[in-house]
Figure (spheres, one colour):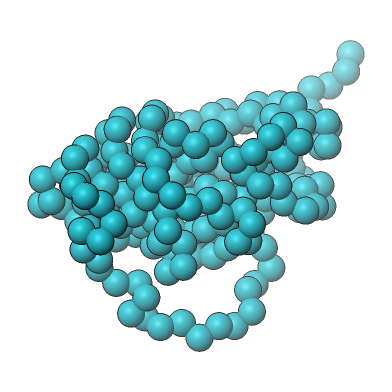
Length: 202
């Protein structure tokens, strides 16, 4: 009897194998020929760059939103930070994030939270499985899941703000479009946001 990929593939070999299998990243929001791939492992260390600590600083919501109805989330991909303001503006949070690997993979603009999930599961697209037949067809919630402990699904297909069990990714260019947070931070953000929360990526 043929063995199922998920039954025969260890976590270590699966995660290691994706590095060679993925190759050139695909643009997240687009077609079946270019599916979103959240399983890319962290890249090699980025070249040393001069960072200004002031780039990770508190911001006011007014330059970015006309109001804070339902709460507002601003993702600054340059400073690799996520800002949250509550609807009544009494709560402000600032979190470090992971960001997309390249400019081509980075989508900017206005969207919103359309679904919230604790313990998200994940399934690769049919195109991913054609390219990588050894990948499992389904990853349940848990330490192997690339979406971490919580996920906020956005109105853009395949885009999410989610946690990660691999903390090396935070603060780095390590995704194909999604925004990643430490699990403790996405858990906190999950409780403060709602379906309909405004999201702006810049």
